[in-house]
Length: 255
Length: 255
Image 1: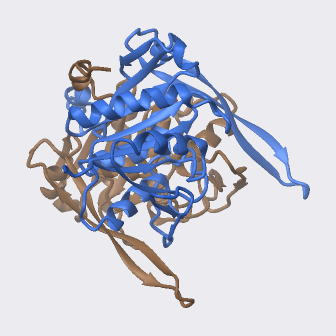
Image 2: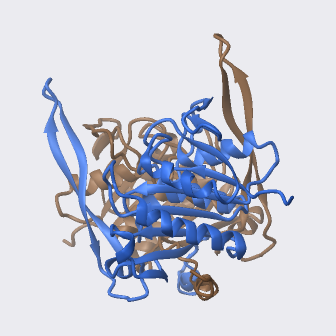
């Protein structure tokens, strides 16, 4: 019998989040799982790693029948710790999510879900982050599960290109209303931040981050367009952040 | 008299780090400063933002004669909070650093210093992250200060291209031994991680992240090459992480 693929599952909402439960439910039909996820919500952690604190790993019984661990670290720490636990064995695929909330466009930078996938990509492992455009704890993941199944299946059949991982976002729609899949570029869209100022009972001012996400990109080849039009968006994502096109211009600087 | 440029200064090592002191010393000759920096070290925080906790801002007297504030947040939080404090006034330049330690190559992803610059770039503000290849608290920043002066001066004269910020790394060399400046691409180099396992006095196992940074990229157009050869490296850095070149390939997937 052929060896089953080994699939590392992680997320940023923590091991008890319904989104990772959906991901596990789908991924288990494709191979053997190792689940290494944060022991608490780690939303907005981006590519943070823990350098000034020790990390702890605890076995988890939350998913009976699967090798599962929680860590005290960030999503990127979870990938690094999983590689350590695997002692040289390499996963065939890393899946992260399903995130409760969109990671389309520039949200890729803030996203712990996607940063775990990018970290897998840095390790040379095919990696995919999945996000559903619904922040609710009790979001309906049934449409997302169908998308995960299709994409995981194809990712194990075909090769994700080297140094590339996938940022998959799924619209908040019943499965029957999803129009299909679009391979997209990241839209040029930004958070217009605000802060709500409040006062503690002891009279000290504090600030809560708020904001609106604004799209400045009319391109029909973007993830935002795809999602607005009922498609699952797939953005091939790379860790090379070089603005290659502007090297020549800055070369003209007098320094 | 013409209005002086407004320069926002931040970092990830915290407001009392010698590196930000050097940056302030140089930047103050170019304009009016607003300093908004973390109240504690925030190394390795990447593009993390604080979403589940309130943030505090405190005025700081650490740099007399300058408007200075500490925050309880990450470097990216500091940029967002600074924009809030400025009530609509926009900095002409954001400078972040000088980091104690390299942020060349893929370190850009983990770096709080560079993530603050990327956040400024998302806001449409010319932004530069500076890092010295010396982790020591008492590192010699005199060579770095010369580089900062040249680059800040030129950045205020020329325009940094739209949607681009600069990742500047400075070799650990006396000023007289620095060979000049190179505009580079990010090298394909990675952390080979390890974890040191230790045991608490109460017998619980914990893990410290360790590792070696390995370069797999012989290109003489890379930041790693430039730094090894005594040049200051300048990588134009973008927030578009789309792997545009692989959209066509993934379009052939059967999904």
